Length: 155
Image 1 (cartoon, rainbow, N blue to C red):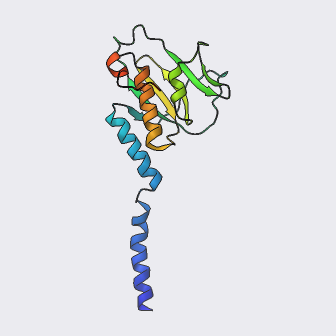
Image 2 (tube, rainbow, N blue to C red):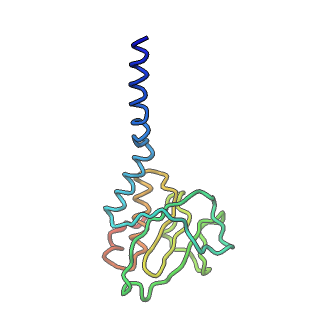
Image 3 (cartoon, rainbow, N blue to C red):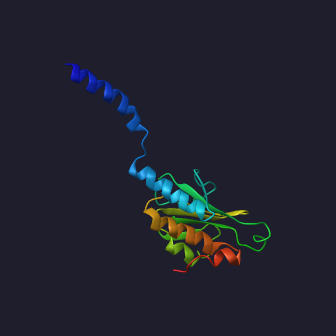
């Protein structure tokens, strides 16, 4: 009986501690976000907004935003647009053809926004480090600064 009480007391102490240990998925997400931060990419937990109603996303999965800042002087003659992965492929809000760079994004990427001060890719963070590298590469290739663009590898 005494051993049972001791075992129960140990379980009562260790149980809550095990709840705060990150899972394998949480460690993988932290690793991917660290990798993005090292590449100068800003990771924020926000959903895409202002998607035209005619551009329906493929899924309703929650998405995370990976963004790369653009200096105002670099964005002067830069084309701003929103691209959404639909059942018919990548479509833009402006109706113009989508850049070939978007085809290299992982399946979980659903929205790309070229805004006034940044380029953003909204995706579900599935696919591990290789998918994260594809998102970082796409952001670099779309950047108007030739030095940053040169860091990307065309696919």
